[in-house]
Image 1 (tube, rainbow, N blue to C red):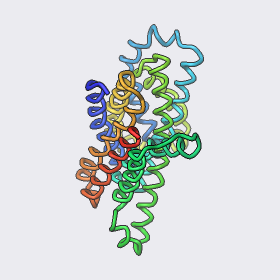
Image 2: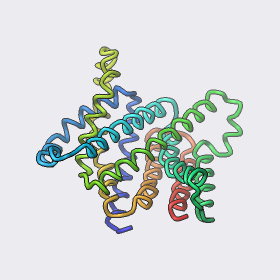
Image 3: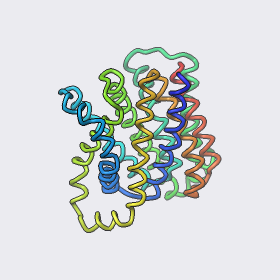
Image 4: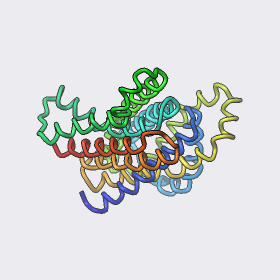
Length: 293
């Protein structure tokens, strides 16, 4: 992987962890996702219009298909992620979401597509499993088995984390194909697919307008922060994909788990901070080993 691509991924990791912490603090739902999308459309309009003025009219069916597909997958990803943050801790949901995508894709390839795996890859699987165990509480899980509230909270975080990871794997493959093989602009891909997300999220925003208005007043600062920085993190990754293989970029993105586990655990005062940081390290190492094996 070129050093420039790795630098993009590191910067994207810091930004990605930061906006996830903001989303966790907002404690929002699909209406928060809609509000973030509105701010995103407005804030990034000058860039979108400048880059897309002469390019978008030339798009054909294939390009628009990927725009719609990207928007749909990102909506499911964001809504499931936000629901996980409402039900559990960021230091449970986030590492599982980031680590489960590459793990799931590798397991599917081995079990159903007949692909082989080396000892390094097997070690990677065990690394992810061990990391998941540590993130979920490690040995303390056995002490919490008599605490139904805490046990249910961790279990919900694990379920939502893995489901989010499945959507991450889906949109990563889709968007990477668009920018790498269709030569679509990463900025335009993300900006135009945002309008698809807005259309899909609009019914939820209009369902209870009084609650939506109240949430907008309470959460607008977090929504604005997410709108400003989240496109930057993802566009940086898509530019990295143009410089390096997808199979290398996707696992390298897991460095963001370390920032989230460390920064998020401190800011949000979630327990077992060091244990979950260690778990995030094992997940990251395991995912990289899967890429190599």
